Image (cartoon, rainbow, N blue to C red; front, side, top):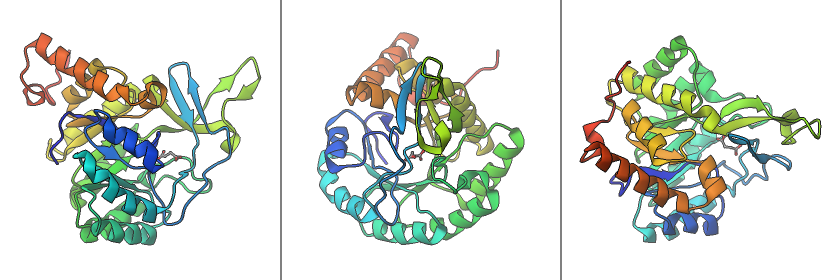
Length: 299
Ligand code: SIN
């Protein structure tokens, strides 16, 4: 996929309705990622389910979405923006994912991001933490998907888990790896109110923003290393500035997505971050991202 800049939106924030997606389309985001969709429409979890917090955000949205059929239709409408449209698929089981992908196969979407990492579905563990299930869903979907299909992963924290995930990914060879989703089941407490800041799941939710950038960088770097740079990495987690984006590219990412900063700042964030990144390249004397991609030094 040709991208005008390496900066676009992460699946999740402000990408549920056609109006919201049009706003992303009109912005400088270099692609439009639609909300992770399920077979049937979902209301999602009870409110309040998102909160900005000191260094980022916490959410337990629970995949509120209009159902995949709407996003297949939206893809047609969004093509006029002249940038890639990416469907995010988060079926509640393998058969759902296959059915949803079949429909997107016959739609104008440019790529599919298979979300194996939503931490907010009550009673459903994240597939990315169940390696046997991850292997199965990738086996069933990568074969039948006619579009470039990437995988959105949860954060890993142990080298053994990075290695096992990379072994499975290399077996199925996705078109890209997006890391990371929010850090699941974090708890933010308001000491004044002596309360959690979101309601679902007793206040536990996915942490995003600046808190998670070091973990996101570690995941981008590790998967870049373990795949020998052969599978493009899309870095997400704590990108607020061009300098943050630069760090992800240095770690090995090909592109970056923005979640929390888009929620907080609105669609102007894509232009600001892309411009800041270009300015930083100029200051450093680089002509392109390829000049420094993956070339992180160890001190
Ligand atoms: C949600 O809708 O709960 C967030 C999506 C995700 O974390 O994948």
